[in-house]
Structures are given as structure tokens and as C-alpha cells.
Length: 364
Image 1: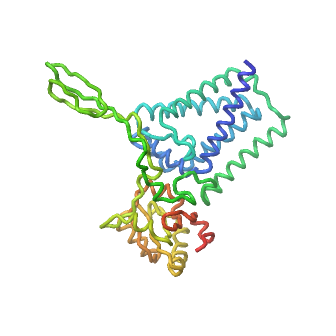
Image 2: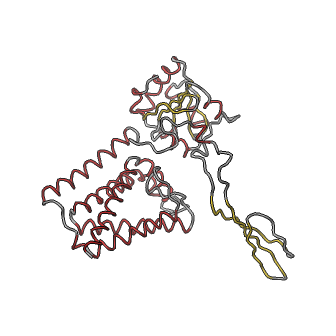
Image 3: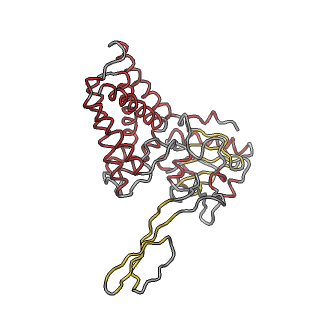
């Protein structure tokens, strides 16, 4: 039992640290995922949505710290109890999400590793079993250092996690796992190769045959049945190839201008997923920055999901001299983790990105 506990301790501790650190690298992204869970389509606890960012920081810092605590043997009973309660909650959450097919990706490893809901649930079940082993064998979890060094390491892990979370919120994720990272070519990320795997669908056809309902499963072809057709249900067995970027669209009131702007050699995009929620200090910095970019020959545009009235108002309030085009809110949030944020492109390739705090770091 002792050796099983130690193996479980190492595996669980490392996994919690890795999972927590990846989310701590992008707490804003994890907060967006929590908003999905809190929404009416999943848990229906929408009153928590305004607190999603604070909750995300607390959860991921706690996740990293518990992993460190477990590895160094700091306060074993507190650590194991906390791990157990956390993993029970997430096991329930991922099961609910998978069973009712509500959230397509749990966000367990941020954008670094996408897991399906059932994969997430399976991962949590494994962790639950390992945590139960730790709970039963908690007496075998001993500190690996004396009391003072153990306490110092525990405290430093907490301080370092908080500092790192604050740092990436005030700037951008230190590691960008998304399809809009520097060096990525957006048109290429949107393409589907000719030889890409096609989706595999399963069709369940229902007929009334001699007064009884009869179901026939096919891969798409209409079955030959001597009966009255009632309906058909479609199930995706394999989604096939999915482009890294599926829903980027830059639109005016009249047309889709995505290809036009991505073909520009010198393009600056100002991302504001909601102009009314933009940080006032950051919005005030846009005017001198964009004026300078335009003088240097850049095409400057804004991306936002806000309506025409709000966009017109924000342009007037801050005397902005660029047009703001329509783009899906989720996409804008994905491009740059800031409101406002900046992304610089050359014929569709991302060359620079910045949080509004770091506009001075952009080289035009």
C-alpha cells in the first residue's frame, strides 16, 4: 500500500501542477470556459458569471499549490481532503457536461490540449481513484524536507502562482497555444486540405411499418423500407478534420471582408470583444497608437461584436480614426486576451500581439 500511495502521490501531484499551470498561463481563457459552465445551458447559475475571472484565478492557483503541497508532503490531511473535494466537483461537472453534451471542451488543459467531454470525465475518474488511494493511505504521505523548508516552499509556491496569474492578466499569456499565436498564418489555419478526413455520421431512420415503429441505422443513404417515414436523427461518430480557425469573419454591414484584410501587408487589428466593457485606460491609449500606425502606412481596423450604436459612440468618445468591423465575440476573445488588445499582421501572418498595457512594445 505504501508504494501505491507514493506512486499515486507523484502522478497526481505532477498532473495537478501541469494542469493548473497551463490554466494559470491563461486565467482569462479559463474564466470564459467557466462562464459556459455557469450559463443557463449547463448549470444555470448565471449569477456567478460576473465573478468567473476571480473564481478562475482562485481555482487554478489552488490547483497548482495543492500539487506542490502533495509532492512535498505539506499538511497531508488538508491537502488530500482538498484534492478529494476538488476532483469530486470536477468529476460531476465533466460527467454532466458529457452526458448532456453541453460543453465541447472542458478547459482542463486550456488551449494546450483539447479533450472531449467524455475524455475529460475519464481523466477525472482516474484522478478520483488515485485521490481515494491517497485519502485511504494518507498516513504514508510524509514531508520530504524538515518543517521549515517545507513551509517555505509551500508559501513560495502560493506567492509565485499568484504573481504569475497577475502578470499574465496584466499582459498576455506567456505561452500562446492558440491558432492566433505569433508566427501563425491565419488563412492557412482556416484551410481544410483536400485529403482531410471527412466527418463520419450515423443516421437513425424511423418508419411506421404495419402500425409499429421501426428504426434503421445507416451511414447516410435513405433505406428502402415498405412503410411510412416518421423522422431521422443524426449522430456524429467522428468529426473528421477540423481547421484550427473555423469562425473568423470580418464583416461590414454590407459584405464579408475577411480575405481582403488578411491579404494586407501592413495590418493592425484592435480587438474589443465588447466596446462598452473596454478598459478605460487602454481605450485612451488607442488614439495616439493608431494615429502613429496610420502615418506609417498601416491599415488599422477594429474587431468587435458590439452593435453599430455602441461602436459609433466609442469612436466619438475616444476620437478614434479607424472603422470597427463585426466579429464574433468568442473569436475576438480568442485572438487577444485583452479588451482592448492589438494584433499586427503581414499578409495574414501574425507578427506581433500585445495587451493594451504593452502598446509601447509594438514596433511599427
